[in-house]
Image: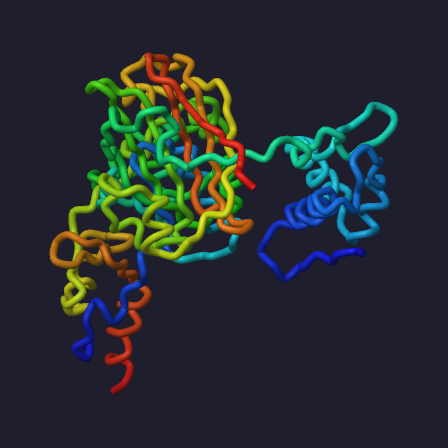
Length: 173
Length: 246
């Protein structure tokens, strides 16, 4: 289905995305998002910031959703994936203007390590893109890192390129 | 002669105006003690906004090229540095008298984005990647100086792969990557460290340290920004100058 295409054929360079160390505060991460994506109108969808340790190993990713969720106490309490059946899901009674206020300013001083999503899944450059597609869909990953020889972080896979390759073959017939 | 500024260049306008005015002073076109044109005249001269001129002039005042006199205008300083003694110094990786008693430990080598003041100090925009190094200098196994170094990624991408424990950044620049260092600006101030940096120096958060900020240039580009945080111990920062033999 994917024409034998490999991850290395579709991956983006890691410098397409901003880098931050885990000790940056959420506020600093917000400034990075604004400077790298919003002010420059460079919308490298999905918008994500890569979080590294002191030895430049990739630790995790932070998306806009992770940031906003991380600075609102009410959202922090809600489990990430819904664990209640559909019919029981109701919007809680919330005074909307009570969200994202003073408390959020305080929470924005926390390090990003507390809100980042750790990297658990990755692909190698020589992996078929079908593997990348499977991992991204199954685990609902915004982006998937490409790691060479289990050590060196060399690229990023996005749904856009994967979709493009896989869909090509399907609509061709 | 009126030099024109380039709007195609990425360099900020006020920095270009700064450079042009600086050259006028250094070349003697504007003599020491003379009054410089008004903001309005400068705006017309370069076809830029008042804010741009104001920024450029403020920087020249800060660097000691110009002096403001209340109600009179802005003047070229008489005791400008070029009238002083010309002295030279050796550029050392650590500004202490005896480097040999110091041991270097690399605490961090990673990539960051320069949000806030850092972007201004480096003269790069906030969406550019920066190589970040954090190095601890110990003497007698005691932490003494903490160094943070920032290098715009595009200046030397391979630096991230280099062993900076046994080699200095300046040596790598000069000897391996042909980046010639042409000038260095040092700023000294009293500073108090945040919790995280204070821990590395084994001092309490907020304890005063001396901060030496070092801008290392190649031409007009900052290729390296160093911040040395020196805690209060028996080691001293040291710079030796020597009269150049002509």
